[in-house]
Length: 350
Image 1 (tube, rainbow, N blue to C red):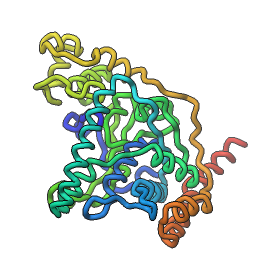
Image 2 (image 1 turned 180 degrees about the horizontal axis):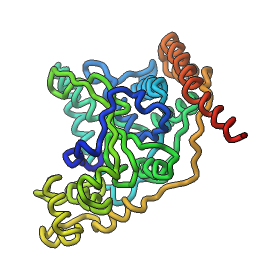
Image 3 (image 1 turned 60 degrees about the vertical axis):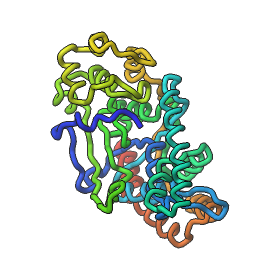
């Protein structure tokens, strides 16, 4: 889930994107697990049942990945994905917490179905959503068929995305979580994969969700702190590596404290706070996470046959819809990626 820095982000540090065409020509590295979970929870039947093929295998994540990636490309954006590797040991407590939440939600979903409470069933089904290794493998297979590059991170995907963006190989990282800012991404794009009209939980109210770009440099300047101090604030609020944070400290209080005392070490003594993992160890992980430079962001012409075999023949997608979507994908590739790549190659040959 990551740390929630939303209440600390001033308007001057973020830009609301009214039209995705504003990101035309930009390479964005997307947190794959984060995006797949969004598709898995959002694309469901009214009672919360996910989309499935004739063999009962969940396909919501593939549907979202396929159609949303095409939409992103049609706006001239060059998407790439990064996938989580092995999580650090200090994340074990958070992983166990999430597992317990899903187990409880599964029981509540089954109870809601028995009661005929469709709204509650959908809510708990979303909370119980699980992303399996097989589902991730299918997602990577689909991206390969679409000609979209993806990177396997050695550990945290957001750390790898931040690294790629910090090297200038991508303009920004994209995720709903704020952690990539802590890992040093120069820009974070939020809401990229969920843009559009969305229903508020437990309310019959719909809102329009628009992408936003948060710039790390502007954020630090606006708050008057360093990246190391931003990490200290995150640790006080609670990260994946210390979910509980410091009791009684919210975003604004954390900012006041870090400005007054400079570092979290002094604040810990003041509050007599205890941590399952030493704060310095957490900070060093954000500053120097395991990443790899062994990657290539290369976009290829989509393989229509491979897409059809995976989605239609293997997972029972509607043939006509897939055919139409592939035509859109081909057009987007040729207009926004192939043409640009050929232009660059011609320029370098001068």
